[in-house]
Length: 150
Image (tube, rainbow, N blue to C red; front, side):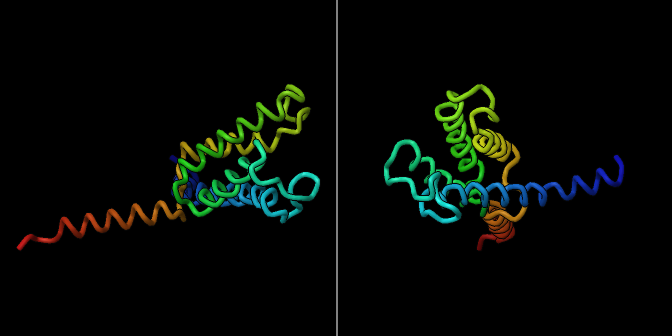
């Protein structure tokens, strides 16, 4: 294995973590725009009416899922649910307008679907709350093993 490959392999958790953070932030922004009218708001400049199917529910999943993915808490589960919501968005909302994403304006849904699905399989990478919790648990187990009963 070349030294470049070895260095890249060592950096993989950090690259995955950075990827997760960027994807989570972008997904969160979509939800925030639809729910709160920030960052340009929902299509047309406003917010999605509370309880409107499917837009409001999609926005809640985008906001909550994006936040969880961003901080790396429950990453795989949040990414799985979020990926599924984007698959639904693509096939229910965009695909009837045309076969390909460029024709039906579904590029964002397709890209989010696949990038979030990738995070289901890769995990959160470095710099995630999931990693802090698991390392804390392993340290606690190690301390428990080192403690000698009286």
